[in-house]
Length: 312
Image (cartoon, rainbow, N blue to C red):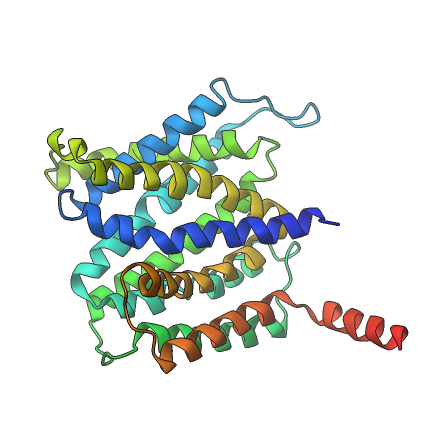
């Protein structure tokens, strides 16, 4: 029988599966759109979809106080970090350093999330040894995947930007955890987050001198990919991700980020006919192993061993 925690894990896997495939859509759209344009359009579509699903929003549970200014600032913080600054830093980092560098550094975010939760929400989620062991195993696998067939090259500015993006996502996870306590439905909370993220994007559009060409949307390939990013990777995935944080907590949810490079590689092999090497296979297995190690607490392992012993 599926419990809420089981649904949380399924939700996390579904989310990272879609996020792991978005690189293809983004790669196609970059032929006609600037990165900031893609970012702005996809989240506008996402906000519109969530608005249509819940036009007036849903009131908080009766035992919850109304949204206060402090809580509104937390929504603004989530919008700034998760739907604006993270993607902006990641896109800029890609212009200064190798994609493989960015792939590894961004996946450090689960470790940074754990540290932030420990220092700011210590009483809620405890750090255990298996989390750190899983992190080392997973990041080793991601390293093999990212640097398969390429040389390690340090590019200070780009690498710092990628690391900053990982820290920003960790901050977003913290904001999301706090928002989950407000008593709002996940769709409504995500929509509010998108709204603030879009507001922060507006000055960036002028900064990068963006110009939206209507003719680009007449191309059905462009239209399909931008809808995929807006409806799937933005509206749907952010709702399922925020739901997972609410159910599993920020730390356990964040470790699913390890799977994104794995899914990206598998998708590239299937769709783009990219070769699968032994390094990629080894990296994939290590990454998946790290995910399982991070999600298995010592108490859970002892429970399974005792259950197996009892059956004998």
